[in-house]
Length: 304
View (cartoon, rainbow, N blue to C red):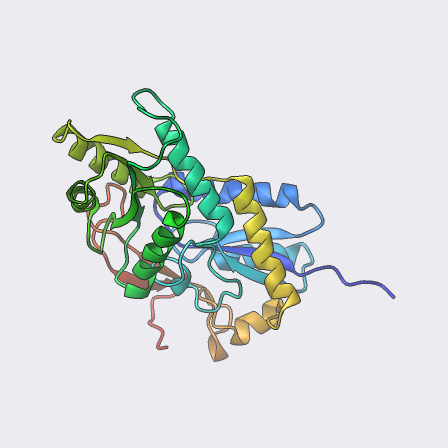
C-alpha cells in the first residue's frame, strides 16, 4: 500500500504594506521549506502584499498538492492576527513557552551591554512588553497574558504592557507607569515576530521618552525573529492539526466551504479578496485604521 504524502503546509500571514516585514515573512516560509524538504510548504498574505493566499494555493496545486493544512503566522488570535483568518486551522503561536524563552533571551541581550550594574540580577529590571494593538479587546488581552507568563518565575520586578497603536497605554504612558511603580531599569520588549515599521516605531518612541528622562536606564530589545524555536513551533501547530480532529483539506473543499479569507463561496468560488488592517500614525503606508476588502479583478462587494 502506498502511503499518501502528508498535507502541504500553508502559512497564512497578516497583510502588510511594510516590505521589510513582508520579506521577513517570505524568507521565513522559504527557510521553513528548506528545513522540511519532505513537506510542501507555501505562504501567502491575507492582503496588501504578495503572494496572496490564493496565489500560494495556486502554487501548491501546480506542484501536484492534493490537500493542505493552514497555520497562521500570528502571535495572538484576533485583531491583526488570527482574527483576520477565521478559517485558519492552526492555533495562534503565542504565548507558547518556547516563545517566552526567546523573549527572555531578548531581555538578557538588551541588558548585556555597558552600564548594567549587576549582570544576572533581575530584581530591579522591569520589562515593558509592547504589542501592535488592536480594536479587539481579546487580542489586547492576549498580550497582557503573555506579559504575565513572562513575569512568572523569572525574577523581574515586573512585566508591564503597552501598545504601539489602537489601544492604551501607548509606549510613553507604559514607560511612565513603570517609573511610577519604582522601576530601576526598564527593557522595552517588542512583541512582534519580525522587524518592520511598527517595531521601529516602538524603538523611536522609546528613544524619544528616554531622551527626556535621562535619570532612567532604558534599553530596547529586539523582536523575536526567525529563531529555531519559531520554526519548531510552527511545525508543532501543523502537527496538532494533522494529528487532531481538524484535517488538511483539498483546494476545492477550501474554496467551497472553509471560510478562509481569500476565497469566495457558492457561485463565486475562486474569486480572491484581500483584507487589510491599518495602524494610525504608522510611518509606512498603514496610515489611519480601517478594514477594507477588494477583489482581484472585481469591484463588487461581498456580503458575509
